[in-house]
Length: 316
Image (tube, rainbow, N blue to C red):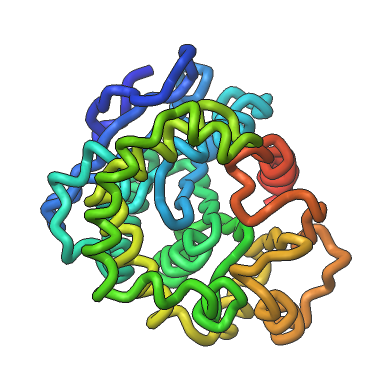
């Protein structure tokens, strides 16, 4: 099956072996920007019954998440599931040149995600759309739910950073790094990373698969991608404050949460959200992950989260 009409082909960068997904580009005409996307078509040559719309964390590099999304796809038994992953504007090396710096902030990212979501709904009017967001992608997923409450069937929030990010342990430690005054010096430092070999990175990140090492290497060598990720992170620290409890309450039946056992990007906010919503942490909607699964699960724990999302998918 070919790509949907809202996507155009894009050459793969990191695929060592053939995979069932297509690398593509979503052109955001209103924003004069483009975003790297990935599309898994239904196995059967039919219109999809269910579409997963995936929104990554920061940095928003879809290639980090392909093992996770592919694992969900492989677990499907209906052959009518499609998956659409949409990266953040400016984050993907090789696509940056079409993205103005004004698109690095959350407002533009929200606009781009809504445009992509609307494209799904326009082309596949009868499909159920489930939104999955990781980290700040969870907060962005909630913005989709807020703007399109009827069109969204369910939202899976993975390691959700949906409130007071600047107050979390990592927010307090690292927020200075996202200052606009430091972004350009850090950008220029990225040129030095071109001296770092794949072998050296593999030694530093010895638990990472080589495909993930290559994704990291490409990101570190792209000054524009680093600039985009830092700019978005700065905006996150400023804008993501109190949780939207009203939104969470109104859509209680559409939301599913996956919290890490320990997560320095969430911290005590996990308990604040659970208590504010009077969520029962023993029910299937709220899962506390195994202590060995980190916030950056996509690196080498994709299978665990794919299993969880698959189990939610067919009861949502």
